[in-house]
Length: 573
Image 1 (tube, rainbow, N blue to C red):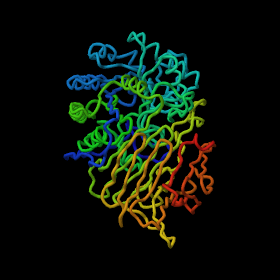
Image 2: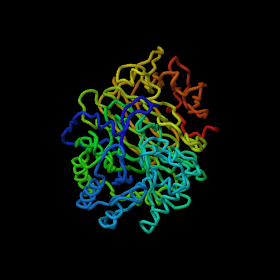
Image 3: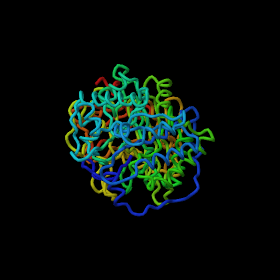
Image 4: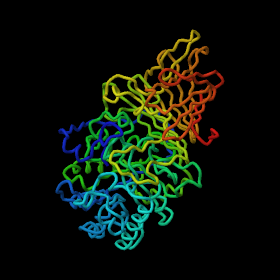
């Protein structure tokens, strides 16, 4: 897709505006080094890449050859003998040369499916009022383009119409459905009535194309029936078809929103055109600790035009087939990945993304990152040169309904945020958002001496990451000797220090702009939050919490590792 920086909550930018105002892009060429040998224990993970291109028949903003990208993509994919998924927006399903071309050119290991955005044709066929501009056949604004702009009953009618037309055209049901903004009502209906194998939804983003998504799982999950952006905790609340996050997102830099372009694998952007970024991304996919699953989607929608994507699309296909030939990843259709997921996992499995080298090979203030994901929470431990800190903690709850679940959205410029324990972007101040020094929301670690004074922990050398079962362990060598050990478990996180004076205590200091945080109260063993009138918490074990001026201070008590219980189902709430 297409994402660009802007103040969150506003309308932000569209992909088209990014291209129109883009400066000449710099492509960096370098030789990739693999992840350090300390990134251990990843051999049992499923590592899967889908090539998915989606097709529109209408682009009202400018004249463009929309069949040329499809022809060229098909030729490249066939030349590399890769499976692929082609998703058609409704207009491409009922008009233009797209269906005829796909039927004539697709190899047996390709599939077609539905790109579930609205346009005039599907609304007319479903008997639903078109929300878009009167003179446009397709309109990118949120209330017109996405199912959340329509009532639940209208969403079901639109879904039924898309499925019926697809079956009439191709002779079988679609098994793969994706969009930039799928909702729980639509996907529950599609899963329950049509047995969809795979859904695809947008990556996390800030105010791009009129909407923010923040705090959702990093790769793949079974969605909740109340919230398409949240994994279900209990089987009774679980939609039976898995959701996959799209676009192959850079896990390091996207979060702080400082790059002047979307940093994804899309071949129209600088990141996707950079050989070193592509190599680093594939290396994370093939060699990095991943827990149960490493997943990414490659490809590009046709409405960017072939000239924008041609060079990098070819480069990525060359690199992908090399990685595939070495046995590093499985390349298959989205539908097959969904079926594989359903066979392998009865509920959302633990996952990780570990990038221990700067994805752009920056010399000044290089960054690296570790993400962990379970159905109960997601967490991010981030590294900026010698500094390291918790950057993100979000929890999930089956009772928390997504925005616009039952009421249609009527505005362009919306937020869809999950339940934050720590939001390193939204809870930072405007100076940080502008790329300057300021109050950066984070969880930083200190050693507390016998005199009660804090010594901030800084890193020397390189962190190491290993995994065992459902646990991911990160060990950070610290200045002065010793190490900070973080162990991410399915329901909790444990922190400890090794190789330091026994009289020292570990401290975790959450810092943020208080007015921007969701924190409401602090007791000795619990942090209590409220967001969108929903209450949630995190519990402290083997330590005690205390409210601070700009956050919370948690101090260990020597009874074992300092633990944060993240699973809401274990808190009695």
